[in-house]
Structures are given as C-alpha cells and as structure tokens.
Image 1 (cartoon, rainbow, N blue to C red):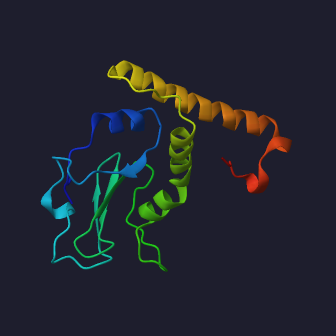
Image 2: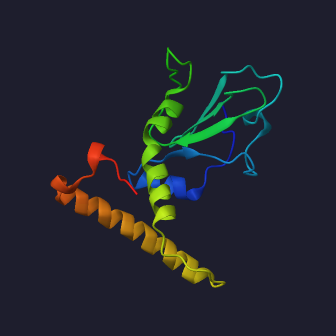
Image 3: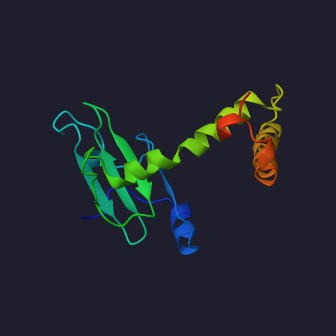
Length: 155
C-alpha cells in the first residue's frame, strides 16, 4: 500500500540515528489522506495500516466517528492483539504513555512559571520544570530509602 501521509523529516532523522518513536498524529495534520480519517462507513474496531521503509502508521476506529492515528518506527508489521482486537502499536503506546502523563502532572503541580509575554521566558520556565522533575527522579533513584509509599510520587 502506498504511503498515506508524508512523514516529518525529524522522524527519518531519528530513525537513521537509531532512535525509535511511537506517538499519535493529529487528525488536523494537512498531509493525512482521507482514507486514514474517520467515516461512517468504517466499522468500530477496524484498523488501517500504512508502511514506509522507516515507519508504520495505523488508523484505528475505537468508537463510531472517532479515529486514533499513531506513527511508529519501532513496529514493522500489522499485528493485532487477540483479546482486545487493537493493533499492537496502540497496546504498546498505552503501556508506555504513563510516564509522559506523570511528567506533565508533576510539571503542572510544581511549576516555576510566572506570567510573562516573552516567549523565550516561557520556554525557559518549561525547561526548568522538566529539569526539576528529572533531578527528582535521579535523586530518588540514588536514594531508594527515601521513596514515597508504593513507589509513587506524592504531592
């Protein structure tokens, strides 16, 4: 099957540097073809795969008139989980997205941002937030006796 949308050059660059990528693609991305978007004629639970030399893309219909589009450089096939009937790419994404959600939650809860109209300051504040979360993770890794109960970070 031919490519359903043009892959960002950053994805190719990461692939050639032997770094993997697994993430969602926004439905408003202008290069996504109509076959990858939701329509009333598609069945709930159906999947459409597209392959390039470096990437695998999947369009999955979880509910009527809803679509989830994922892009992966880790997967090279169209395997579907037997129990849930979801593509393996989506199962892997769901298993690994918790770390990103936790970082976002911690950055929001313990932020250093201040109101400003200067975008470089917003970027700098974001970098400080991420650095603070990373330093907490390194500290807790090096001091396992100081971990909060159940190995979860608490407010």
